[in-house]
Amino acid sequence: MQKQEQAPVIGAGELPPEVPLALDATDVSVSFRGHRGRWNEVVHSVGLGLERGQVTVLLGESGSGKTVFARSVAGMAPHGARVEGSSVFDGVNLLDLRAAQLRKIHGDRIGMVAQDPNSSLDPMRRIGGQISETILQHRCAPDRKAAHARMLELLDVVQIREPERVARCYPHEISGGMRQRVAIAIAISCNPELIVADEPSSALDASVGARVVELLDDLRVRLATAILFITHDIGIAGRIASKPQDRVAVMLGGRLVELGYANQVLGRACHPYTRALIAAEPSGQVPRGQLAVVPDSIRGRQDWGQLVEVSPGHAAALGAVADLQSSDSVDPEVIS
Ligand SMILES: Nc1ncnc2c1ncn2[C@@H]1O[C@H](COP(=O)(O)OP(=O)(O)OP(=O)(O)O)[C@@H](O)[C@H]1O
Ligand SMILES: [Mg+2]
Image 1 (spheres, rainbow, N blue to C red):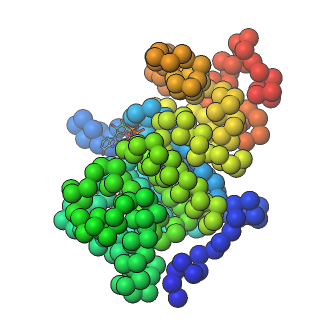
Image 2: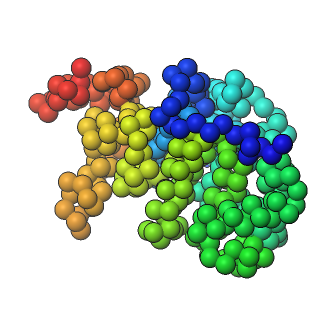
Image 3: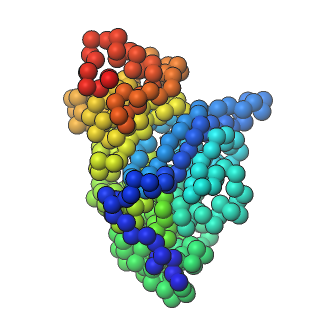
């Protein structure tokens, strides 16, 4: 039987409370070998649980560790990375699996849209063949003909005009935005339970970017897919994290400094870094034309401490909470 027919069709709002986490990452640290072979830790003990039917937006400035963390917990750590901690998917720690075991899961149960779509496409093979192969490899279609039809349907879903023609192109013959949409088509081809989308709309114009957000939203509603969506655009974060169960996690310097439901983090941010990010948004508190600068005293500070709950479901780094409590700007509804 085709995998598509087996996929559970559960509305996100109907999930029973005992549904396990789609992914449970605990104390994940990632290091690379640096100068004189010394390990240099770039992600420090980050924990994050992703639920079925939930979008979790990972926000943070360039270099804060979003990509390295997300790839590592999905079992796709960059070459040379040392990953510690655990990342449990369906009862299995992905960090313990061998490459061959991971290959069975990737593209089938976990879809990845890489930040650089070139890295996931084979430059020597035509677009259509690459998508069809993923579909066949994971038995998401019974035969070549069905895989071909599904491939064309997917290209249409990601709004590629003339799918027949594009299917015959090599990656270098299409634009960067189209390559990104092809990567999205591959990631969603087998209706995965988890999608890690690393800045999937950054190379796209506004309307196609909006379509990608719609597409992912539709998947999580129809199939209760868990989505980890990376962006540094607060506006997009608010659009994709649109349901009450959706969350926003904020990274700074390889650490999680704030985590909560989207309305809590985007509406009542506790951490000065999150507040600065929100203020930097053109529609935020900073007048257009002025770029809010995150002060070095915030960006450069390392000792924010562990996350503590400030209200149900909303946690922020201890240092930020202490600062808030000692300042006059304490919102008693935020700090309980
Ligand atoms: N393959 C690698 N080897 C060594 N260091 C790396 C490697 N990949 C990433 N890093 C380092 O890890 C840190 C986090 O990088 P990462 O790519 O996760 O940032 P990011 O938050 O995704 O940034 P951006 O928004 O620019 O994509 C950076 O200091 C980066 O230089
Ligand atoms: Mg990145």
